[in-house]
Length: 133
Ligand code: T46
Image 1 (tube, rainbow, N blue to C red):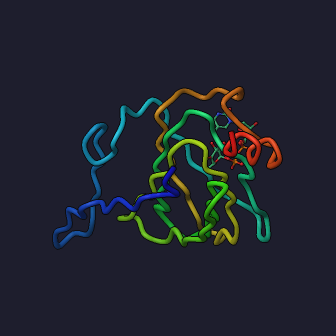
Image 2: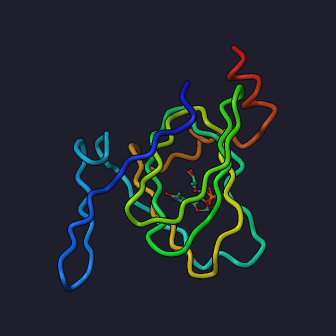
Image 3: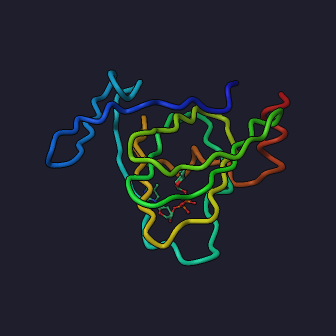
């Protein structure tokens, strides 16, 4: 199971500024069923601490930055999300934690499935057991 892939979003800029267009099954490699965004995260607060059994997501910091730590049970890597033209593709069975949100951070996430709490694995011990199966 791969940890993550970066997707470069082509900036459609002109003299007025920049624009990014994201299309399902094109720029984003799945049918987008849900979009959510995280903003106003308080200083020093971390989020995430879970994996998903069956969910693909692309996350992009449209403003500001945060650090994401990804772990598939075999490898662990930290990446900075700090560009509105770089999306992070995270597939299923990857433990994720988000730290060091800048005060202006807006983390936009496109998801391949509707919200389903039963898809979350919120216990790290359970996650390690499942990836070992
Ligand atoms: C993820 C990371 C990057 C909903 O009702 N609908 C939704 O679509 C979402 C995403 C959340 N919620 C509810 C569930 C909780 O009561 O919103 C509350 C906060 O969610 P959570 O604690 O899971 O938020 P994060 O920031 O820890 O994780 C989120 C996503 O849930 C998760 O899928 O990969 O961002």
